[in-house]
Image 1 (cartoon, rainbow, N blue to C red):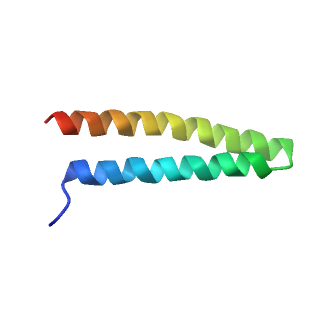
Image 2: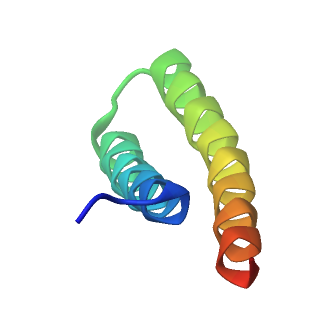
Length: 63
């Protein structure tokens, strides 16, 4: 059975969660302050994308 849009969005949300966990691990191991800032910025932006993805998944579940 093929996935529908909701299934693909849910998969994307799960992939974003995994990416977030990886960035959090990177933060715990980074040594240089400049690199820490870059990773933190990436994590912050990813969090915003996760929120948007979650909202999209919720909308698709309702329709």
